[in-house]
Amino acid sequence: MSHSRLAQRVLDIAESPTLAVDARAKALAAAGVDVVGFGAGEPDFATPRHIVDAAAAAASDPRLHHYTPAPGLPELRTAVAAKTRRDSGFEVEPNQVLVSNGGKHALYNAFMSVVGPGDDVLLPAPYWVSYPELIKLAGGRVVTLPTSEATGFRVTPGQLERAATSATKLLVFVSPSNPTGAVYTPEEVRAIGEWAAERGIWVITDEIYEHLTYGDARFSSMPVIVPGLADRCIVVNGVAKTYAMTGWRVGWIIGPLDVIAAATALQSHATSNVSNIAQAAALAALTGDLDAVRAMREAFDRRRTTMTKLLNDIPGVTCHEPLGAFYCFPFFEDRLREPIRGRSVRTTLELAEVVLEDARVAIVPGEAFGAPGYVRLSYALADDDLVEGVERLSELLS
Ligand code: PLP
Image (cartoon, rainbow, N blue to C red; front, side, top):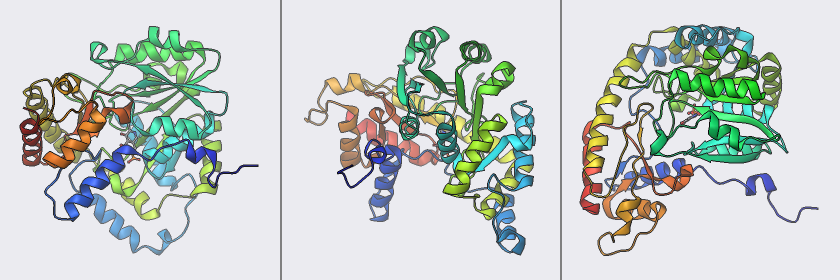
């Protein structure tokens, strides 16, 4: 008999630290404090007009006032398949798509459907905050694989091979990466995909930042480059980052039919279908053009350059150039060897507190991503705010 009030599975996980930082910054702002928030993982732009209009029309359509099939509106699943063909070249059928409440819920369904007790999951670090908690919720064991700037925060097949055992069920792969901004080359994607296919290891590949790459970096989709992996590969994607639709909560997985059937059964009991209004908005997004994301990408690219330079100008701080997504991931540990305004600050966790209190700037400490010593700053905010925020940081630390 269990004596604790709460179930062990929730006692074993922590609240999302990025959402917590963002909530704290938003609460301070609501209380009239002038905070610059680098914490949020979301575009600062409004959702494009034609998408909002589609949602407004959907809200007035009585046909959409009822349940849809649990895996999503048939036309949306068809649109996801068509969009995937268009953007990554992966040929899939609509019945290989399960529409969920955001990429996060899609990941939850994916992990719950293929990972269980006794399964090890390889997770390259620095990792996005939710992966370890989702793996634990599914009953799996997290095996982190540290990476550093020296390898551009990318794992190699050699590293994977050294970490794999007979208990290894799955690899989590994300490119472009949150929090590091790393983008794997097609050759690297091939090498990792071939390794996984040969080893019979599943891959969840998170493609949510597919459209946000800069310079010469290009997104490439693992099951396209390594078709032999498709039977053990689950693609995760969504509208949040591409169309500035984080609040609409629409994401999906694409996978083999047995996974989709299992994950659909799971979702049918947990949440049923995603809100019809949000599905109609996602349909408009996916069947429309990519003009809005091109404009956003340009703005992010500009801010990326500015922020990387300004951060590298702070003594004791080094920031590699991110090639994708919308985060800088600088190294602050060298700066922590010296006191900050007479105070000894030993960790980036403490640094984030001091920075919020003294400089009114919200940043996410690397500890949240399994990478102490680093800090994540989103550059998805207005150019002026970005400069102001990094200047405040610089003033505090110089
Ligand atoms: N995957 C990665 C790597 C992310 O950074 C995020 C959001 O921050 C998600 C998935 C989930 O996105 P959403 O649930 O908003 O669709």
